[in-house]
Length: 263
Ligand SMILES: [Zn+2]
Image (tube, rainbow, N blue to C red; front, side, top):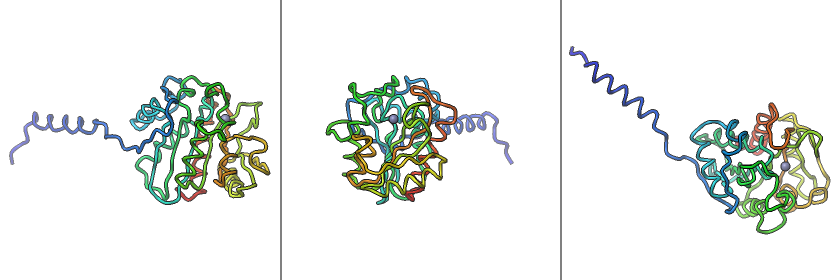
């Protein structure tokens, strides 16, 4: 038997190594659902350092430069939406959402998940809480705002659950890792929050009627529209990432998907 020349073998191995290192073409189904909000979130130290360092993450960051990006996973009839970055200074939830996108990428799931990791990338880029000088989570009932766009997307696509993920600073309101919901008019909000609270070890903070304590909050506006919604909070200082807060936010997201039978 003839020996394979060493030189030939070396070329083959080099070629194999080269091919395995070529990045795979984009696999993310991406939409820009709102323009004028784009920003380079990788300029934010915490977003850059704590997000998984993958080609999927790079793709998410690139998309966020164009506006509010939304990523779709699965194509089943049961649809849910995960939102983070309503407040651009609440970083753990956005990082957890990027982790979630990495997890869902290429995974078989039931139903459809829409993930919006940065509602206002330009605010997240500089850790700003505001959009045009306003609190984005108090104007979801105002047409033309980024938070109202989420309500529109949820309604027009027949979404059956909205999870809005935030962080709360120590000493703030609510100031603790928790799931917020309302019983009226969409009781499903309370049921979903109860499950998420138990699964993730977060406090359950139910209000009676939507739109009363937090008028214009994304959660409340969705519940008033009959779309079950919850707000999830993890304790972390604004503009920073407390130890364990990303994992906790991620666990809350997993709880949300599990409750809805997606994973
Ligand atoms: Zn918030």
